[in-house]
Length: 283
Length: 267
Image (cartoon, rainbow over all chains, first blue to last red):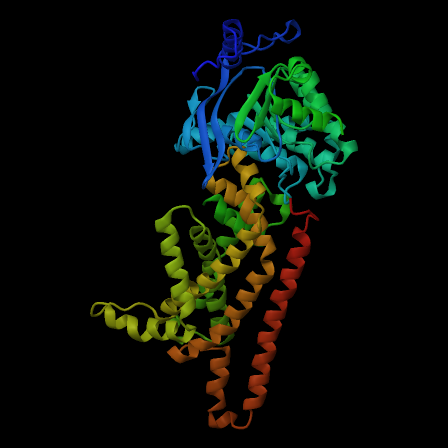
């Protein structure tokens, strides 16, 4: 603790300590309408640090995600939010601290990494569909080769999820023949075909035209309503407001603020959050 | 067979509809068991006399050397290209040294070494087939070139493809065999065919180790008093045959590119 400034009254100090404790130790209690969150911890990050050479990207990140939670991560570009979620399935390696996903700690052990990746679905900003395979084959590939499902069963599942994202009629086309919004929905279906327990979204709507954003967000809202554990890096504040249990604001590699959405938007605590919100909400 | 080999076979032998089916496998296996031509060459069956490989010659020898060379150099080149991009320092170093060594010496040297120098290092009485030695030399030589062509293709695949494959839980060999190599090899079809055509024409060099391929046979016929004065016709005919084969390969590669085109954006 820093030395108590003389100008502050003892009451004010206790209050500020209280609020700090509240912010760091107790997760905000979910409102009555969002009681689907269970006590089971899916992702735990403890003092995670990461450097790109000299650049300190993630600084002492502590984050606990429970089953069924829907977390939106926002912040200015370069704040480390993509790196944070890419660390969760080890597309990026952290240098210090621990990341435990559904009971498996991420270390250099390849078996553990592949196990964790099988349980986590990821949707990228640039879709990253496999251009040499048809939409259906994109969806069937991982179930067949990773889950070892028989072809017929994999096809049935792929068609099921393509229907879920409302594009079963595109199954026989190649990704290059689809619009951006459709490609992103295929990417979501492809991830869902692995029956993941957690879904990560890395700016899923940032590369889309405005009118395609809605179709992707609708799909994501549907997924959230079914109780999927989701971490989503996005600038769609409307989505954050309606879907998220918690909003995390990052800047300079640190989690600056973490709160449930109404509080986050109406009563941002830090100045940096206020500035960020004023810039993205009133332009 | 690893998915890696499978991908390369698939690219050159099966149509794209065969993907993820056992039909693709069947068609490859079926082709590889068609080795009847081997017995026709070697003889010693159905009352045919046995023919030593040292007496093989002409167009058939050209075809044997180039087809075996291609078939061996292609998968080996892919493995070398993967090895050169490997995270493991020892594998990478071995592949770099191999590629730089074989690319740095002329094919004539390779053939000469294999037929003249190699027996000096082998124990007394141990002697293996001259044709086989030439085949191994040609295959290793071409594999180094092939490796660099394939590496060019691997480098053109966006990072997102590796990440998407990894995020789905695919391991290294499946990622390479199912996602990266099919795209990379498709990109470098022109380069691969270029190398194959060069290999096909380079087979004429086997004359210096006493194997008579198409050009070698014509060359020796031209010195025969009975054929005196017909050398030009012979060489023109050889040129025509070589051109026909090379042009056919070129056309096939263009057809293959068209067939494999899925009109995708590089995303």
